[in-house]
Length: 456
Ligand code: PMP
Image (cartoon, rainbow, N blue to C red; front, top):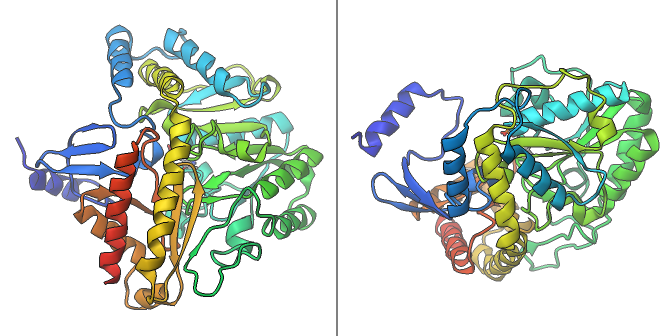
């Protein structure tokens, strides 16, 4: 058998450099939040494959459902025949939908494809063309979804021309409520850790809604806008929740103008923030919801859900795809949705999220003391962003160093996998929703030690 360095060399030579890889580790097997490598290392996974392995790696219920399904039928194109895992998944999804209007589904394999479907459905059901998205958002890497993505220039640069008819609106937090600058929860002198609650903050909502309405008066008339798409919690854009006040305002404006509100819940949905969807915290109901990742514990499955009227606006045959509703992925989804209920997974996401934020807030002030660095800790449930800012961070940048990237490297040396995100100096904490209290403390301990080492 090949050694880990030999396999890494093959990847290095024969995989495109367009894929940024954070390690050369080769996985042998994985269980829960633990990944075992071929050279005998055990890594603590705080990435969950970018928020996909919601029930942890190889949850026994998912493994047995997928194994059984592989033994019965692996590919049954949804337009040709129906299959039981498809019907099971639809019934289980219906049971966790926050509103009865969300009752009609279409499935794809990746988040990007499902976003593409949402754009198509919004256009055909409204007879309008334009789509408004928010700066800092990530909606995918296909040409259509890339046109809506502005979390990092590298994703878009020189891949154009992109899809026309896209208008960018300023994001409430990124444009009006920067870390530490929130007028409603200003950092007191001497404080180094800021937290802004999306449940109560109203400071960024008003100017952002004003700008949004201005766009409708100056850039694109409401009569040509099919949909507004928003991540209720920015994912690749740095784990930033939009405030409840903003989401409610956006819902009101879109309703008034007959514009469809699309929630991209690919990263923040399926229990990640403690509720089926993150928009539920604001008490709103979007017209179209897109989900993926966590719904099938890492098996490729995505979907959109909307009202019957909106989804039925598509002519028969206008939607399809070879692998849509793949039975194995659907079996994984049905088992995942079952585990969500039987193991009270969403409650665990809330409890572990609170635990992690508490641990961070207790230790970070001491760690950054005297370093001219401030930290913004934010998020919901197990979708927690940690953003470093201030003079100390800028000084490192001038020396050609990124604090978040250095912390990620230091964590890797401690066998902790964590993700950086966005163009800001931010780290995202996104472990499996089933992570235990001890595992959470272990990972955060390694993370804090990594920051300490980098700043020493
Ligand atoms: N939307 C959001 C919010 C995402 O986080 C992602 C993936 N990171 C996508 C869409 C695209 O999903 P996929 O990579 O499965 O195409």
